[in-house]
Image: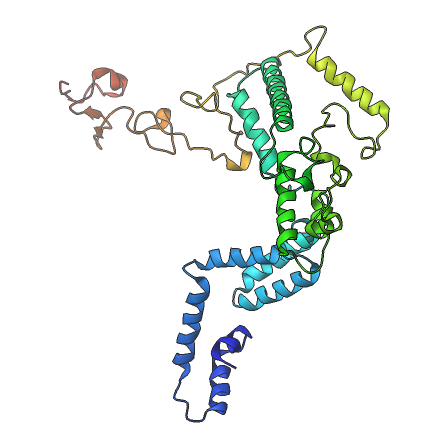
Length: 378
């Protein structure tokens, strides 16, 4: 075995050197030679990437495993590759592996998710709603009207897109095999079907069908298309999610929704009451003005931002500063610089003011009658 093979097998450098010397007694290599070779192999494996980038790439390979057996093999290789990073491996085992059924393709591709594997759709909808709100200081009636406007505009955009896809026929999909699907299936679904069709024509699909594509996308895979080779792909083989000829945004499929009709009617009644109220139901809450000084000044703070408010643990109370000396830890009532610089006569306790002071800043009652004193003009 070579140094690279022994290194990948997890053999320590000294044992690698001993193994090589057993095979070749005239070997002149030393421990530094083995370590230099290991560093060279590591640089070649990184291929210009940082260690953390290479770790993420290898972890993505583990997540992309097609079945449980391949996942175990990929994870064992990942552990062997980063066996020196025990803290990282311990974190992944403790935090992520217990939920591997939620993100590893070997498990997620068994569910009908139509290609949605991330939360980007919800984040995009949130961002779009914030563009309509603009500010975070709107009243309830204004916010409600803007939300209804956003939903109505999005509904009109979806209807326009559906009508456009019914009229527009992609040139690549205009073939005999997809004759029944044209103008009945969405453009995205036609693109996915075309990829599977090209794989069937060129024979580039896997030898064994895993069934993941059909189970997760609701579309026939390249292996399934072989059954309709030299024929026309039937429209019944397409899931109703991808149909644009029967798409209805107001009526749901009864086979997929087993809830009773009473909760639906109640929810629809509440929604219609919100959309078309007979009298205004939304009122601004009464703002109670508290007594005393506000805790902090709001001057200069943003009042039109759509950012979330800071949590309590994120707020750091700034210490109050003295308005005279600008120092922290005391206020203007206890400030030593309040009366200005002065010197106390240790014999009689008379405060003698220096240049820059005024007569009003000294207490005349503290000056003894028998004591001679003078004041410097300001």
